[in-house]
Image (tube, rainbow, N blue to C red; front, side, top):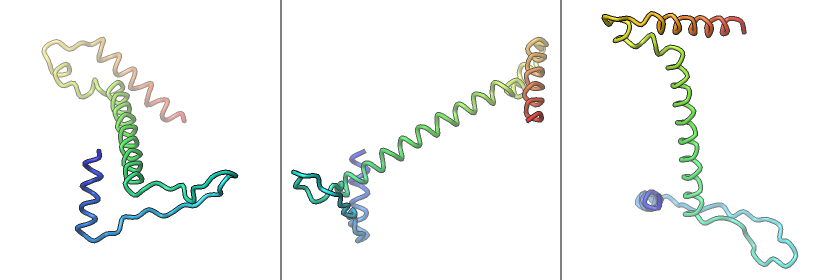
Length: 110
């Protein structure tokens, strides 16, 4: 990850793009001496990259979970070997059709 930040900063330098963070000021409590509480540009870029990577990981997990649910409901329809094979498992096929019927009926009831 630090390599990605360095690469991005290098590209910004090559393209003559200024990479400075906005200075955020906050009220000082009695006894504090610091004037600003902002992050450096490098720290801000790193923070944003971590947030983006976290969001990507969450979205990928959500999509994978949705795909697993779709496979549970409709997977029996795309299993060509069991549908076109010599020995068709009628119990499994019947169970899959009943589950599909239940899902479709719940969809149209709402």
